[in-house]
Length: 363
Image (cartoon, rainbow, N blue to C red):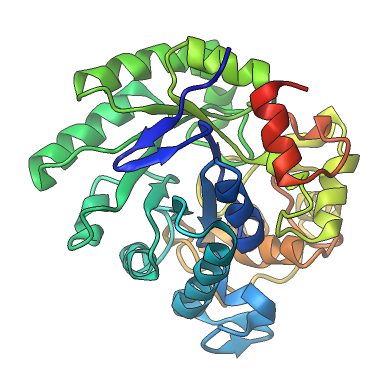
């Protein structure tokens, strides 16, 4: 079976593979630029851009960390990331992943528009007002992330009524993805919430609004998985964890080693200050947090609204901005290493080109 290209708004992605946005600093210019260059859709994470190039673009540092949302989500840092990604992929479609739960969401969306991003993908909440921030940029495609047909229906109704527009595509994320889930702990294990059971109802809902392309995500690993999702009605897939196993991935080598060394039972759901369960690898940090001996929580970066300026971080036992940035820097003692449930299958580091060829042609 040969795969059809994926259409998102006015953009055509030759290979129907979207690389998941991974922050802090896991999918920046090198990874995303190369995925787009190789015919997929590279997705730049907007999280923690104040850390880019050794915090060169952070407005102000406190204890070596970018201060407040303005510094953590640095406009200048993101512009530099986009510029460097463009050196790799030229004018091929390039996307940004912008968390709805972040502080300064509207400002970061506008920053992405001004930086020349083609497609904006938003999850971690229901982005009912997403089109509000892209006025004046009609060519930018908007892609919400949902975990149910009901969520897609709500978004379509609101967008159509308020903005007279609909999503250009939708990412449907099941509970095997890395990072934050759109489900409670209990819902993550329910059969009806598994990706293979969600695709059909979401595709049916998408058809009612003019055949919005559905991109299936969470636990997709190889060509067989892609074929399965497309046979169920998806137009493409999103994959994050598998791309960590590439030379071009912007993650520190230590981060890649954590995933390479992980066993199946090491990848677990954990609490998060964002208010959703998150999936990652059990490490030294996990054990410190369970004993309530984790690093001090100071909320310097003020990254996500649900955390309530560090209150939720204190409840959960860690600051997500600090711990994800530690992982980006390769700190094995206090880093938080997100991974999808299949991360344990990663056994070697290859090039993005080789990985894209494997995914399209088979192992």
